Image (cartoon, rainbow, N blue to C red; front, side, top):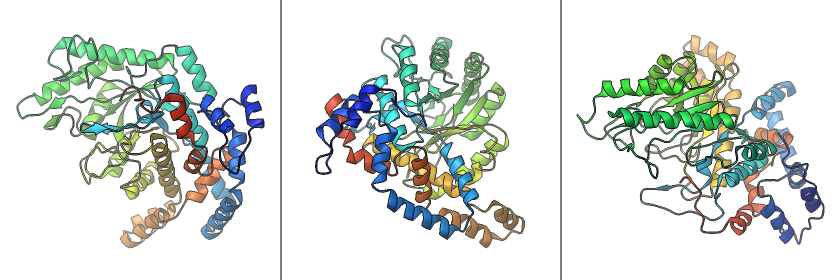
Length: 459
């Protein structure tokens, strides 16, 4: 992981002369964070880790002893887990809300530069948030070169760019009220196509390599829309966008069964997404949002099918109780998340997937929520690595249902948090990211810098 601003003499000198007062963060500490709220260098994190290193080492040694696996086995796991980088969406850095209201906290990012700063902070603390996903037109950079330089200094890359045809923008001549890429009016469809092409151009300037297309297009009442013609118009529009892709880019076609339209959605399920991706060409893939499924859908089976066809592009991670609730990853259905990663291990070594969190933290600190989500994803991945694949395959071939369940649940019931803490320690990240975030009073520093009555842009 890149050490943010290790080349800053000012920052090094401020760290050198930092003073602690009775174990409480000093005013100079707050000044440091105020100037560089995103820049926690490895030296400071290592100092904080040192205070709890003994306890961690005891847990890590115990974990390895109980497991009875070889050191080489754990080294391989650490290597694979270290490589996992999860994109943070720019719109998730502020407080979420519903149509009933929104209760924002203070210190939210007011512009793209501050959103990048927050992602840099998350990456420094967790070691696994080394990418940001932008939503256009909310996040159009004023100075592309400066934004790219800032991201490079933070060790952050630009993940998929996201288009927005689900709401009208100020001054927009045509409306998306009755659809965008599927609209009956060719002028509206062209407006939506042109927007997506412009989003690709913005992404190219930032060295992104993919675009995610999610449509709210659909109908609220029976008879409102001709299903076939709407789908054909959508395919034609997507083809124009696809043809604008650079050779090394990907298009992710997202699906959703309902909302904001409640009778039908044009791209309502993984079958429709797969059909479109297959017709568009080899650069088009399906994108799985965990919240975009009806209750009790077997998402892990969908993942297996898409991967089998070579059309699984990536994920938007969240969790839900009822519908597209966008709750903290792993907060409701951690077992399902684990089972998804069990299937993913069939092809994760040979395929390239896009990982992104897509959550709405209505009543929690957004940065703390994102750290919890990153941890949940890594836990599921680590647990899946512990599954004895050879024994599972043999039990499946023998139709030994009981043994299959025992093998799977043995891995799921393993507390892998000492393993993940060791991964973070080796990568120069915090042993306990949320605890360090709170100890350093980073939210207080952000409020002091940005204000207590700020709304993150784009929400």
